[in-house]
Image (tube, rainbow, N blue to C red):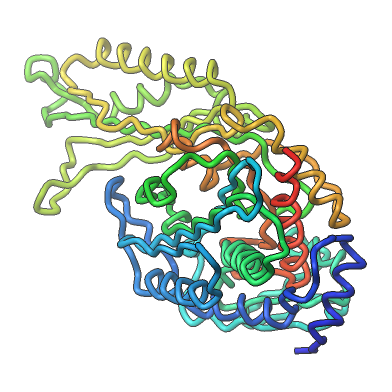
Length: 454
C-alpha cells in the first residue's frame, strides 16, 4: 500500500477541512487503514438465533471486543474509563476537559457483522490509488462504478479502496464505524489541547440480528446522554433524523384434524384456513409492495407449523408472524387496531380454532420522537466545516439508536444515523474507502467541538 508521512497527511487534512485543532496528534492514513484491517480480519459474525430472549455469542465477537478493549486501554488518558461487559459490549467514557456545561454525547457502532453473507476466511484486499475502473475479485464478483454496488467509486478516483477477495463479506458494516470512533477516541485522548465535553462510546454486539439494545447496560455510564450519534450509515451526504417504528406480532392458530364431511359435528378446527383468512383481511394497499417514502406497511412474512418439545412437527397448528412498520404514531395505532379487528373476525368465523397472540414486541422506535431539535444543525455544520454538504433523510429501517430508544425510552434520546464509510453492506460486494474514514473522523470531532457552543 502506498504510504504517506504523518506530517504530510496531517497538513493535507488541515488544508482540506479547516479543522482548527493542533495537528501533532493526528493519526495517519496508514494507521487508520491498518486499524480497519485488524478489525475485519477477526470473524465476528453474529448468529441469527430465533429466540427473542437469547443472546448468542460467537468466539469472533468475543475476540474483537477483547482486541478493541486492549487497544483503547493502551491510549491511556486521565480519567478515561474503559469497560468490557460480560456480554462483550465495550463502553468508553471520556470526561469533559472544559469548565462549563456542555451537552454530553454518546457515539454508537457495532462490532458484529451480518450473517446474511459468507463471513469465514475474510481476506481484505487494499486497492491503492484507485484508477476508476471495475474492481474484479474472485468468485465472479465485479464492483463497478457503473452498478449500484459501486456507484460511489466514481467520486473516489485516486483514493484507497478496501474490498474482500470476493468470496466473503468485508465487515465494513460496521467495522468502519468502529474504526472511525476508536480513531476519534485515540486522537482526543492523546491531544489534551482538544477541548470537549463528556464523550461516550458504546460498541455493541448482535446489532445485525436486531439485538443491539438487548444487553446494553445504561448503569455503566450512569446518566442519560444529551446527544446520541449512531455511526452506521451507508450514504456519504445524508444522515437520518427519522426511521420506522417497528413492531413484531406472532399468532398461534391451534387446530385439530377431522374429516371435512363431518366437520361441524366433530368441531373441525381448520387452522390453515383460519390463519389464511386472518392474513387475507390485511388490505393490499398497506402491503410492503405498495409502500414508499414515509408510508408504513403490515407484512405477514412467516406461516409454518410449530414443533413440540421433542422437535416433532404439529401439523394441525400454524404460527404466523407479522411486521408492523410506521413513521407516525397514529398510523401505528391504525395498524394495531386493524389486526385486533382481524383477530376478532377470524375468531367469529372459525370458532373451533383457538387463536392466541403469543408475542407483541416493539423492536425499534422512531428516533424523531425524542431527537433533540438542535442536533441536525450541529451535524450539518460539522460536515460543512469538513467540506461535505449533508442533508437529512428518513430511513426505512432500524438502527442501534432506534433499538435503544425502544428498550430505554426514558434513558436514551433519539440519535441520528451517520455515515460510517460502509458501502454495499451485507454482501460480497462490500467495500470502503480509507480516506473517507479519515474524513468521518474529522466530522465526528467537529460535532464534538460544535457542542461547546451550545
